[in-house]
Image (tube, rainbow, N blue to C red; front, side, top):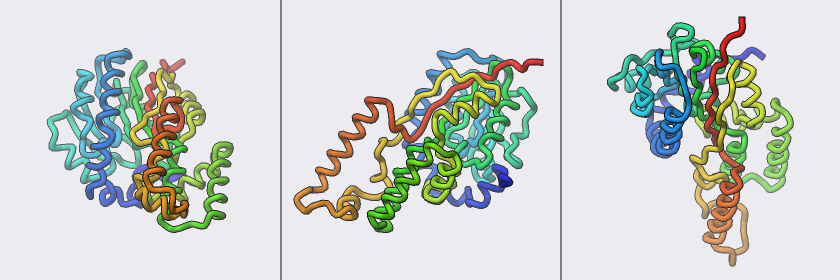
Length: 293
């Protein structure tokens, strides 16, 4: 199957409408504290070239520019959205440019850092995007990205099942399809595209850790850090609906109050986070290996 470019993929979803009609601000307010803290820690703890630029790939309105500036590099942003470029261009940084066909209008090996947060899952040809990151980076440069994991898709499906009042049989069938996605990339993509594309703003992927590592390592990177990112609770389908609607949709006994459901979910989330499993997102740092002649 022929893959779409980043540009045509995003335009088919109407990226401007989805992300600059309030949603982008909501997402940033939730995620920026956790992600920016890790970003600054990476700058302090990992070596990278001190010449070149820090590139924000998929920069949106530019909320991470102040943190990227802490790298002591000139900061450049690229995005496919004209509205994003317009908003980010009001900030006092070196440049903000429009992506064309998924390619940054920048020379090879021009970046010391490529930062891309919650963008890769929106790109149908994710492998092509990773090769673009490799092209842009200098030897020894850092790829710093966050992206959505496959685990998140079950939260989105359950929220949809609650809102659309799916039967228990249908829920059981879809849960089985979700489980099969751990063993088949094709099934995983089908599940994500069926249940997550619209609710999550154009998601094509929910990555599995092993597959993501393989894709990045295969593109000429050495992964130096990959950790769960708990921007949202592991069991987080209630953020798409309400606990009361969950209680009513699954027809719990009348003597089981809403607060009991809240407590059970809270305890499960605490256990999952303690065990460092069930994250909806991941934070990954990889170093570009020198090219072998």
